[in-house]
Every structure is written in structure tokens, then in C-alpha cells.
Length: 158
Image (cartoon, rainbow, N blue to C red; front, side, top):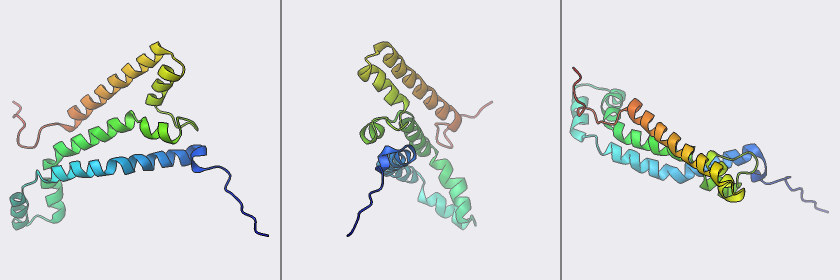
């Protein structure tokens, strides 16, 4: 007689497998968009500049660090900003995969639960406003810390 032993519980019924699946789903969802943003940033790098650096004896690593990365800085800023803000206010994958169970909640899930499940309109609205304020602060810090201008366009400081 053949007996089949089933694994007790599916991956989405315990904490760490749920977290891993949510992370993988987020990576799967946003990787194409991030790749397109990086490709757009790569298009900002003039081919003549890379060829001139090669003629001057720059190694591939030096060309990457000293030419490509500084010229791609605005595209990298946009990609990092989008991804960080999306990760901060994640809702869809968590709601669809676990509905916030197994300790997989986020601040957006907390706001949703307060607004629509518990009908605590004041607390839910406050959470939503706080999420907005945090997103604005994160965006401000990224832009101030990373710099928004392309190299060569910044005004000289006196």
C-alpha cells in the first residue's frame, strides 16, 4: 500500500515562507520597470565620451565609476526613489497573498484594516496621512542626499 505524506501547511501559512514569497513577488513585479529605468539612464551616457576615455587609457572599471555612474545619477535616483517608496507603502501583494495574516502586515495594511475592516475612520485616516508624510520625507531626503541635477549642470558655489 502506498501512502502519501503531505507537507503540513502551505508556504503561505507560516511567517518566514510568507515573507520570502512576498519579497520574491515584489522583485518579480518591479524588476522590469527598474531595468527600463536603468536602460534609460544608460542612454544618457554619450558613446563618444566612453571612447575618449578608452583612448586616454581608462580601464573599464574607471570608465564605469567615473563616467557612466555620474551620468546615470538622475536615473538611479528615480529608480531608488520609486522602489523605496513602493516598498514602504506595499499593499497589493501582501493583501492578495496573505491578507496581512502570519505577521506579514505593513502600514498600508494597518490603514486598510482600520478604515474598512474595523471602521475606525479617524485612526485609518490618520495612518493614511502619516504614510503620505513619511513618503514625502523619504522623497525629500533622497533628493537632498543623492542630488537631482545631472553632472555639469549644477551651479558653482561661491
